[in-house]
Length: 480
Image 1 (cartoon, rainbow, N blue to C red):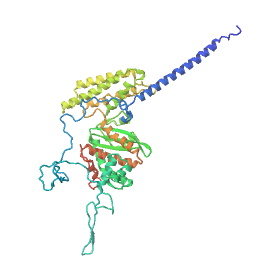
Image 2 (image 1 turned 45 degrees about the vertical axis):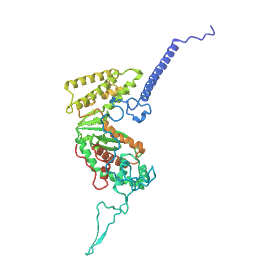
Image 3 (image 1 turned 120 degrees about the vertical axis):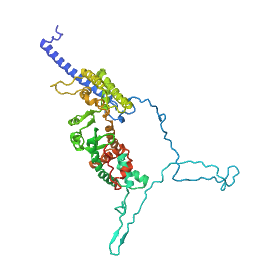
């Protein structure tokens, strides 16, 4: 028929099919890409402080359930514990006697009336806070021989007018312990004490304290090298508008900080602990720590629990990942068993060989189950982006480092001691908004390490600070 279009030829149909196949392949590739992007966005939306390294402050009002098991304790003071009520003292600093002037019944004068009882009430309050000025009059006396000699009183001020060590002690405590910015510290001293201290003076006192702490810092560095177990951690911070890194090496009795432009081996070398350390280094799974082969490594299992929780909660396409929950349960139950045995038998030093073999076997079984869904990269396989679960399994292959806490009871389950120390860097940055100079950051963390170590070893912080200004010198910790 004249109105009917001609049928396409086989060549035209073949070209059309080829074009449609190309479009279908492109559409499938785009769909796969969009699915991967959607899965990644869902994973990020599901991240919180319990399944990632995000801080608790990022959780907002929808706080996730804690990974910790409930202790069974209710709110308030435990039964049988000593109370904390404010109690009267036997020797008050001052006594005010309040005498009634006239009788409520007959309005008679009570000046000479008998005192039949006295009711005691005590008010605990601060005395009036103000600066106390002490003038030092240094006499110059002439001897009969003609020589003039000036007195040399101890701790004599060098300038005609200057602030004393107690005020400096308070200022440094506010700066280094309570994280006040310099301007707000100066404001507090002015409002509370009437001391018009310039921020330049505060900077000078911080530098004086940091110089005085140098001997303490070196002693802590030497002691950490000799310790059996040391935790290491690092976090980013802003210094003079650039990203730098705060590193820490610490135990339950020692803390050392370093601010460095680099995150890895260069900073470790500058800190001077890991290069000479031969004990157990506890840290997260960051690879540069593995550079040091003369140490035994222990991986932080708090990190593993968060990542395992993320695998369970953010599995792609809703595919179940039972191995992640099984491994989290194994780790937590093993640590609970360690704590229970140590509580019942304080001198116990480890599991039996049979128990360790069963633990290792179960661990390998769970990790192998994970590998069925996330196989390791084959030799010669091109590198490509892998899932978070696959990367986690790569670290979990280091079984002895993950289970170090079970094999060696000197080692704790996690690296919380170091993480708590490094968290102070984040708090200080949030309060102050950043650090303007590298020298100021170095001074802050030098003094901060001194105060952290003093706190861990039960020393009064104000006295530890006072030593830096009153001529006694920094407190040096005894080897532990």
